[in-house]
Image (cartoon, rainbow, N blue to C red; front, side, top):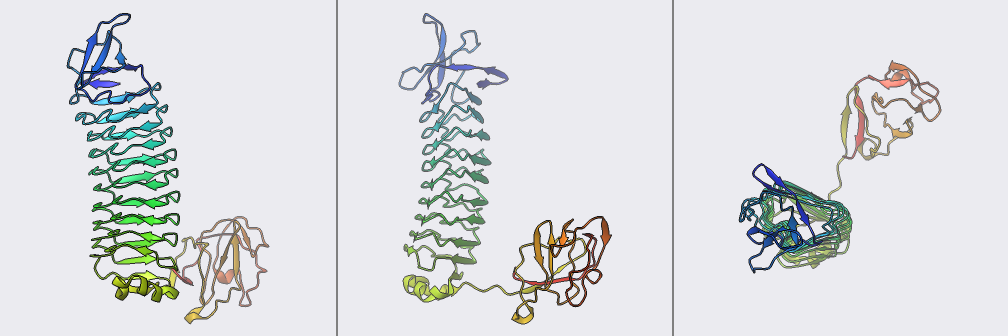
Length: 405
């Protein structure tokens, strides 16, 4: 659908490829038998097979790159070709039918799109496909997409959020360069991050790199001033030159590989004196292999245990690591099982379970009803499990667990 002012006009596309369909500036009426139709005229003077109902009130020169506002690509189209809507400066909205499988190079280059939905039928997004589409605030790349071309979303200055589907295996060069992304989670299907893929994303504060990535490309995160910390998984074997160049906001870098990855020149230059944490057993190896940054390389710190208070009504997590006081072993004589979630409580003080719900105590006694309880109501000093528990809600305050956070 092409929208002109308040008038919607449906185009019947006779071709399955709309390559360069709106690159030209006019749509003219061509009364050629057997059926009169509207024909798009290109810069080179050639014509397309795109046609619309002759009864539609479109006057010559009415449809141009400037006043094309919205487009709906119908079910007969299987691909959006190269430069199909390049520099349509009025185009703010596009709806892509789920018969389309590919978006060509520069398809929406420099269009002021404010919204676009990429259907699950799309498998490839071409180079520069949405280059400098400054009106886009968010984009979702579906799981069907396996390939994102270089600079596909480069310099989309309004782009703050992106969801990358699990089908993507490679993030190409310059794909999100110069965008306004604030955070990015790279799916674990990705094995490499291309050159300057996120370079100059000045608002980027968080980047999650999965344990599938083996290569971080040249300047991949260069000039990401807002990035405060980064963890490089042990799958990474190569960090190319300038990968984190001038990430001046970094306060720490953690590298999990026991064998130092190959490191390009200036990979961490101009990142201040932020520590580079590596496995304790590998400190010497890193200091040798990464000699430029030897003074910054330290062992990954061991977290310090601390007391955490849980007040009445708070839910105690089921995945705590529990340690004894002053480094001693914890005495886990008290085991609570609620809804098949086992919780071990270290009882240096009056510890209770808070608001977990129906279940069993020590896997033995059914619970029913509602009653306010404290720990002393249900367990004696010998850690006996012979007391029946009811639905544990509104229990006493003062829960103390020594845990690693």
